[in-house]
Image 1 (cartoon, rainbow, N blue to C red):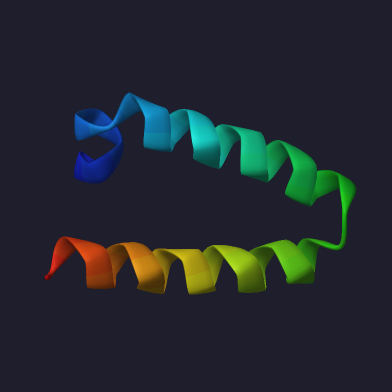
Image 2 (image 1 turned 90 degrees about the horizontal axis):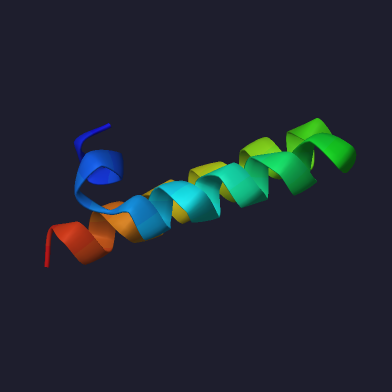
Amino acid sequence: MMVFNSSPQLFQFFQLFFGTASQNSLMNGVKHIFNLSVSICKLLTQ
């Protein structure tokens, strides 16, 4: 959540993605979110 507070653009991106994910397969969306979260964590810990 601290990431969202420090980055409104990232929060908007997640809102947009969740909006499209709900229209598609939910499991597909969850898998994508997980991969995205891992990528973001790697970026933040560099």
